[in-house]
Length: 355
Image 1 (cartoon, one colour):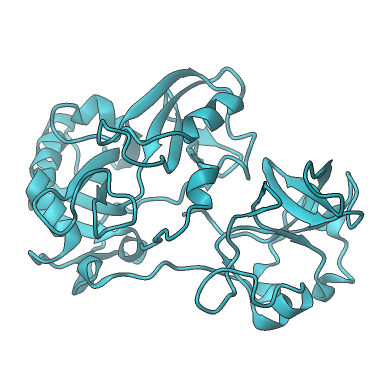
Image 2: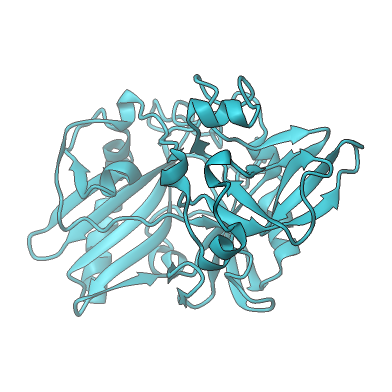
């Protein structure tokens, strides 16, 4: 899940191909459906992204009562309006009437707190929950931003690698050398430096034990001469999320695929190539493409059928984009890594979104 920021943005307005009374306001590579004539290209407005939870007063002000997602109809979600994908909300809230939005856009001001907007936190099913303990040595996962919000994250032609993004639940494992300690956590608990106590009923511990993740991490730690190694994988299957990839999270066929590795070597935490280090050691997320970066090619790869099962059982969630050589990004102030999500995935019916 990406970081929630509610910012002022300079818009590019396009015609809606299927509705005379609607237009498309573009922010980055996102497009949101708006009323025709409400905005013009070059004007500035506030952009509220997907997964934002809005307060009741703002929902009423925007005329969206009963039209948003979630049990309380207060969550922003991608929808199709007259055949066009609309992601997020473009607006000018009354609370910002006296704010210079053009200046706020230039300065990157975040209005989430002022507007009472929060980030949606997915529910945690019992199988993904459990007793926790402090884990100061746990290596946490980082949020991946959407390439549509940050289109300048990669330069055209830059060598990149695209891996399939799986719809499961992120499993964090840290192996600490010397003491041989293993920490297992979810993304949510990991962000709080908490680990799950071992429990044979817990989804993540079942995946770790069933696929030998801790043992692979220990071997890698020794090979690298590292103090700590973090192995990050996706746990998937029926009972985990609505996309199963032919696995069953309730049985021994629970799926697991590693997608990232980091290691603390000589006091510095470095992100490393999981495919290079763990090939033959653990199941890996499919690597779909390696070559020059092109946003249209990324969009093509983000859609289609999944490749995990080898049978194309259902749609693909999307792809994760990484540079061929790990690097820092001044655009996000962290790793150069992003995701691109399939429109079909965003607008599917009956989908689950657990942690």
